[in-house]
Amino acid sequence: MAVQIVMDRTGDTRHEFDQADSKAVTRAEERFRELTGKGFRAVALGRDGNPGKLLRKFDPQVEQTLFIPQLQGG
Amino acid sequence: MDRVGQILRALFRRALSEYGRDAPTLIDIIIERAHGRLEPRIGVHFSNGYRTWSPLSPSDCYAFCERHGTWDLAGLRGALLREGHPIYAQMRHEHAAELIRQRRRRDELEMLRSRDGVANLLERLRRQADALDNDLIWRQREHPNAVGGEPERRRSDAGRRLWQWWTQQRDQLASSVFFLRSSTEGGSRKAQERGIQLLKQNLAPPQRQQFDRYGFFDVVGGSTGKRYRIRNGRQMNIEQLDKNGRRVCGWCFFPQGNLVAGDVMLAQKMALELYEIEALNIANRY
Image: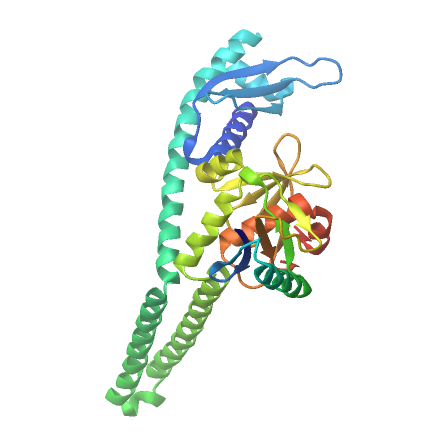
């Protein structure tokens, strides 16, 4: 199972999907496009807190994808 | 106080501010002679291995040496240690007391921030303002004919000014409490906990340890290799450090959407590690 973690006001919302299920993968890809289209950054989380990898396109093999909202200066 | 005493105090203050509650024990005071292009300097050594230095000129030591009647490095070091230990002990004590005071203040703010706290505060302010208002009205009813009299007119002016001042204070306090609430709170307590949990899951073990112990963690910029310190918070919580761990400047950026603190800090960590330049272009430097 893979999971997409979206940061939001509740802490985060998690969307799990089975990488072997093509429909679930399609939905996950749509979610990826929708969120990145809104300005979210997608990051493949590394293990043990190591820096992950910035995802430019959807990769169904990534186990944990974190979606970070667009940044703003304070 | 001697100049050298002031330098010692500054060094102790640096160590205390660095280690907060876990203030280390003072072990040694070191004086290094000038060599090459380096000036003479004084350093303090602590039980946890932390050392901090400051330049020291002979003129800084003159009054101290004269007071202690010592004119060689070994004697100076001994005198500094004798004088430094009680100063440091006192500063540690004051620092601990200050931390307790800060904790209390934080708790009080926490209480005010809660919905009930704000409601209670406003209700109390309203009651007191009403009481003051009623008092003025009652006084006018009691002495309806004396309004034109000089003493009573002065008293009435004073009451009006007091009333204006009170209204202003009340409005300021109320707005600051609401501002505080809106600027620091993001989501419910459960959301806050989820955010911290997600953050901790994505911190490297040393970062997690650092965060648990001190409330901040260090990150290395993915593009420049610069070191940043992310403190527990949502805004103005990033410091750029130099190679000696001293603050160079602050950076302020955060993700949109009024996220909880844990999410904000995780987003800041990811941004600095993975798209540092872009994040710093967006950020404000202070």
